[in-house]
Length: 319
Image 1 (tube, rainbow, N blue to C red):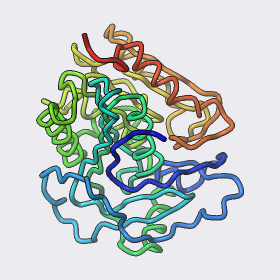
Image 2 (cartoon, helix red, strand yellow):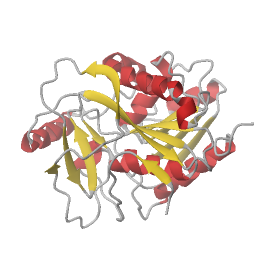
Image 3 (cartoon, rainbow, N blue to C red):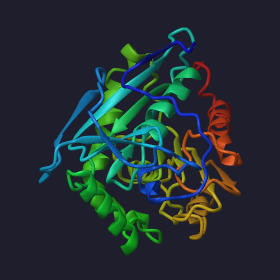
Image 4 (cartoon, one colour):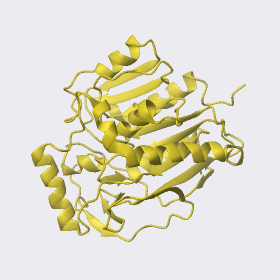
């Protein structure tokens, strides 16, 4: 049994995945022969340890927050108030490192299990404090049929793709989300002693849209300054790299329908700036594989990420 103090509700998922469906925008790949592929509204789960970040309500939002299930996972949408949920390791194995986890979902929904809670649990099991960021989202129709229609329209118009050629141009449109990310870093550092966290070893990992937010936080997050970052199936267009850019871990599947055919400019940007970067390109895996077990080697991304954390000394206390 893992000894982890857990805030939030998690449902374990054990399934083999393949094929990409509309749920890509929600941060997952569709399982083969899935019987639960329909989006089903569910009551908002108990989140007793979720901490309101104090960035305010999303301006102009009218639809209430709602949750649904699909493929055995939980998703949140119409998030108007940002929260941070801690997953703290057993104090006896805590390394002092911490990671803010940013789920994906096209800034319209959040894959709270596959790219949030499950990731945080795995990090806590390694002794790394993890904090799931439920950031504010672009509004969608409050009813499920309306939401499904809006997602189909997003795909049919190509609006699902974040800017690939110039992700820095997208930063201006992510002001609420960057504010949420900055507040998350500030809170973790403020309560570092209580949570047994080294304030100088707080990183961030994001998935899809969450990877975009992680990159935006690195480039424009001002005081956030992640100590290390992970971008899992996010955009790889070139950027202007800060002189003090943190070590970066990147994982992508070569058959990713969104980001696999646009070059690897981001990797080139980091290496040209002589900043540390590790890049894993998996032959198969599609988009949104997250923590789901698959028969492809993309399932091994977390083990590779954990080894990378260890290589940087983050799986043991700082000397």
